[in-house]
Image (cartoon, rainbow, N blue to C red; front, side, top):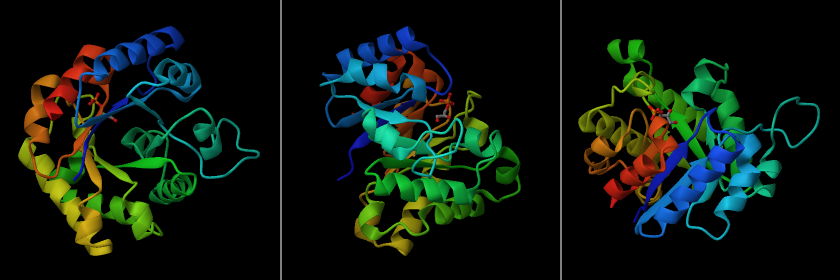
Length: 251
Ligand SMILES: O=C(CO)COP(=O)(O)O
């Protein structure tokens, strides 16, 4: 069945030395954990030194974004080949900060998802509604639209490598975590969308993470939900102790 995945999204935080120290501290404690996959996603510029710190360790490396073109005149962007070159196995795509602050569209997320899969990188596709959308009763529709757009053209074979992260925008960095029931409702909807698009067997293999103010103190009840397969952690991923505390709650 599905293994829990605890993923740290460091966002635009850390520097070279604190990033390496954080990855090293997580890797040291990761050895004791069973039945859970750990992943850290530092800023692109620190992927290489963090990869070095994690060599031979039970913690995977991921990026926070990539571009969908292979190479060329795209100033400031990073390609899928560059990510694999430095050892990234995952890439976060369509994070709400990229959608709502940096203007990324559903179509961009789809192109990036297809490119990552073609390159052998596991995309972590983020979906999630804003507060006003939830209050307007649009939660299911928004998450469905983002899901359907991202999965356009993804084959059944590829789908099992995709990770979905449900991150309600109102819960990100606010300390206002979704209740386990709120999370489970959306996760179950997403699993049903996978079943409808592919089949129940494939849907049963895809990991659906929750993200938004997840902490050691609330992680266990969230991950006790049948369709919550781990977490995409922001603030609490910047302290090894908190990140490992969440990973322990998965067990
Ligand atoms: O956006 C997130 C992870 O991608 C969640 O951030 P916080 O855990 O800081 O709320």
